Length: 511
Image (cartoon, rainbow, N blue to C red; front, side, top):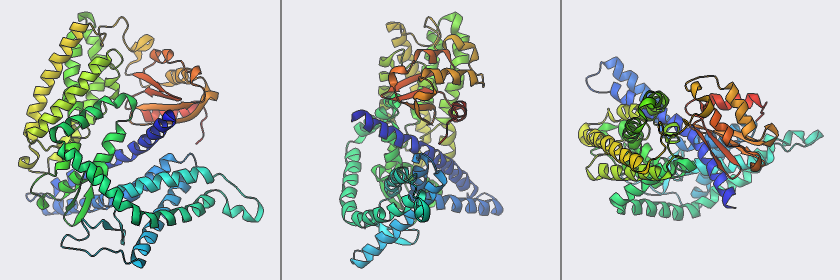
C-alpha cells in the first residue's frame, strides 16, 4: 500500500513538473514585459511590453485550466489529444454546473469593496464559482485522467460503436463532474479553512517554518518527493492568497508573478515569498560545495574533477537543475547530504530574518530577470547576494572539513571516478550505447511497464524488480540511479528528454 501511494505521488509530481516548466517561461516573459513598460522606455517599447504582459496575464489568470488539461494529458496512457479535449470540456462543464447550483440555491456571494476576494468565490471564464484556485485544475485533471485511462479503450460493436473509446470516457465524466460541481459548494469551504490554517501555521512558525520548508526541499531530492512540498506552496492556496490589481492570486510564485506584472499596485513583497527562495542553495551552496570538492581532490585528479563537475555546476547555478551535481556526492556520503540540507535551511532562515524578499525558485538567470522589475527596497536583493557570498564560504569550509576529517570518497578522492568504465565519454552527446545498457539494466524490453521522465531523470516502471541490475548503469554517462519499489530512476541531467525519446525508440515503445 505504501509503495503504491509513493508511486502515485511520484507520477503526480512527474506530471506537474512538465507544467511548471511552462510557468517558469511565463515568469521570465512577464519580467521582460514589465521592464519594457518602465517609464524611461520609448513609447513603442512600452506599448509592445503591454501587449506581451496582457498575453501572459491571460495565462496567469487561468492556471487552473492549464493544470487540468496539462495533468490529464501527461497522465493519460494514450490518445492524449482526445484526453486534452475531454479535460477541456469537463472543466467547462464544472464551471457551468457549479455556477448553476450556487445560483439556484441562492448561494452566490455579493461582491464587496475588493470584489469577491475573501468570499470563497471567484469569476472564472465568466462564471461565478467556488474559488478553488489551481486545486480545481489539479483535482479535475487527476479525475479526468483516471476516468480516461479506465474507459478510453473500451469499444462497442456495430451501431453502438460511436459510444465507445474516448466518447465513453467523456460520457462517464458528465455525472462525475455533476457530483463534483455540486459537492464542492458544501465541502470546499471546510477544505479552504484547512488550507488557510496550514498557511497560518507556517506563518506563525516564523523562521522555524522557513528552515523546515527549505531543509525539506533540499533533503527530499533523492526521493523525488520534494516536488510534493514546494509545488503546493508555490502554486496553490497553501502558499498564501492575496488580491493584486483587482485579481486574486494563490501560491507564492503566482503572487510574485502578479506583483512583478503590477509593480505600481504594491508597497511591499507579499510574505508568501518565503516559499519561493529555495533556489538560493542551487547557486551559492552548489558553488561552495564545488570549490570544496576541487580543494579536497587528489592533486593529480583536480583537472579531471573540474571538467567532470563544471557542466553540472553551471546548469545548477544558471538553470536551477541540481540533480546531476547532487548525485555526484549523495551516495558517497549521506551525512554530507544531510549537512547540505541543514545549511540550506539555516541560510534561507537567515535571509528571511535579515529582511530579504527576493524570489528565486530556479537559477540565477531566472532570479535576476524576475527581480529586476521590482524596486530594490522591496526585494532587498543586495542582502540576498551578500548572504550568498557568505554561504559560498561557509559551504566550502564545512564541506572541506567533513571530507578531510571523515575521509569521504567525494569526486577526486575515490578509487575509481563515479563515471566508471565509461568516464571518457563525459560530455559525449551520443547516448546510443548507454541506452542499450539501460535496457539491459532494467531487465530487458519484456520487463518494462512504463517509460517517463521528469526534470533530470529517466523513470522506468518494471514488472519484476529482481531483474534490475544497477551496477551496470555505472558504466554509462548516467550520474547515478535509484530503485524505489518497481520504479527505476536513472539520473541523466538536462538531456533527459532526448534520452527518454531515444530509449522509447530503442524498445519500440508505443504510448
